[in-house]
Amino acid sequence: MPLQPDDARLVDFVRLIKSGVSGSIIAEQVKQSGQTYNLSVNDLLYLKENGAQESTIAALMATSAGAPAAPAAAPSELTFDDLVFVKTGFWNKNRKGSLVMNGDTLAWKDSSDPKENFTFQTTGLEKVWLTCDARSSGNFCYQINFKIVQGDRYRFRDIHRESGSNAAVLKLMEALRTYFPRMTFGTPSVDD
Image 1 (cartoon, rainbow, N blue to C red):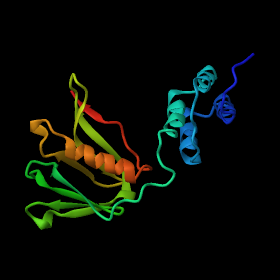
Image 2: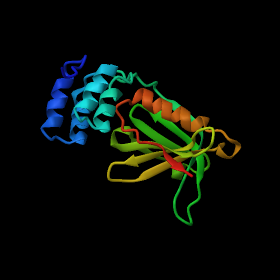
Image 3: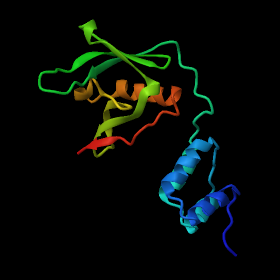
């Protein structure tokens, strides 16, 4: 007798898989459905036995990661100090300052020149990810990156990176995950 899932909704996903629909399209369907799936071992075996790709299984598992149905209400303003805005180009130098989260807006406040201040909207972000150093004790993530849809890329480093601290970057990422759970968070990039 073929294995049956504990969650009967998975039968529909297997029908999609067997009809030739790609794993990436199925994963996108899972994300857009807004439903939560708490996969049992039996469910995982059922999916694997029926040819589910890892991306489909990962998308199903991500729904049970505890992302709230509605994001937590952000405080009126959160300030993240101890950051350096990483500028690219030979003549540009990195700038010390702070990033201020106010509603859906992130504002860079340069510590020495207000003309260097700028803002961007969280709704216009394509992706947010960390840059890390590979270490034997695990990755040391020292920089947060923002990719704007069809636009710029902003990089902010922890000012205390050289002394082994990354608290400012981790605090900022934690706040983004808490208050904007539907934002696209990319896999950390690792410098060897």
